[in-house]
Amino acid sequence: SLEEGDTFWGAHAGDTFPNVAEAVTEAVEEFQKTREGMIASKSGEGTGTQDLAAAFNLMPEMRQKKRLIDMHTNIATALMKQVVARELHRYYEMEDQFSSQSLGTSISQIEELLRDGQR
Image (cartoon, rainbow, N blue to C red):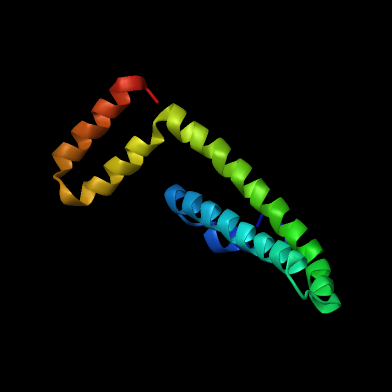
């Protein structure tokens, strides 16, 4: 794995790019909800020292999660730029269609795609 304890990598290392992109978005949203919950409990009425201590104890874990989310977001963004620039999504779509069309049609599509831009 990229880093010891990187649960995101462990969970999504073999996933397709669209699934990884969706998982990154979900991880960001989950982090934001947790962060907002911490802020709300910190600023809420009747917050006691126990709530403040619990939020304080979560800070190292939250910093680590944020760092990993940022790393995976940066990786996914860089990959997406390459997918778009090289039109790799066309290969993925074509591969997905192979099972529902003839071999001749599949070969023709691949040859056309390779001729289009030598990508």
